[in-house]
Image 1 (cartoon, rainbow, N blue to C red):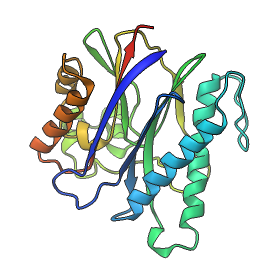
Image 2 (tube, rainbow, N blue to C red; image 1 turned 180 degrees about the vertical axis):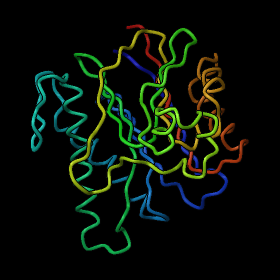
Image 3 (cartoon, rainbow, N blue to C red; image 1 turned 30 degrees about the vertical axis):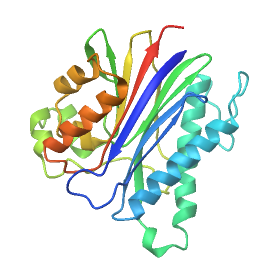
Image 4 (cartoon, rainbow, N blue to C red; image 1 turned 135 degrees about the vertical axis):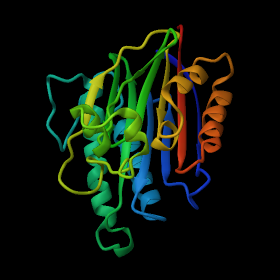
Length: 255
């Protein structure tokens, strides 16, 4: 599958540093966005360590016949790509634990992560936390991932509306993350992609202030992908830029 891509990351208007990290490796079929937590420096370290670990494991397991997931068990109910991503995310969690060991200033750091792996057999998504993956097809925007956050749990249970969740003071509290504890539960799924589809991977600094309908309009526009990323980041900043913003956009091209 042939894809073109662009990415832009910005600290926003209220943060002194950018704790988001990303990876775009079309040669591996790997695209990833991570949003670090833990305050100045620590969050940046967590997201960078996670992205580096996931990229390294994906590189090591590249190849048409490679289904290695050691030191984690291979799940025969999942595709090869989904197994690789799930193992990579869990390995990233262990790398974060190793990094925190003996480093007092990094204690408690963690990161969200959402990744896409395009392989010879298909495409898979892995996700933990509240960074998101969207797919735009024929003008319709689908949220592929579901946030692991306190407010999202309230919305799913019917206790809170989506609009109220966007304003709630606990909207940034995540219920799952890569934080160095026990091997985490990582959501993985296969994703159908067709020529003409566009995919957006983003941190919550974008979607928390820019409505999905507007994201769909911008993502489906005729501008180059670089300009689309610039517009998405600019609109998040125009809405206050309360958090770091990362927008990674892919377009599936005909072979």
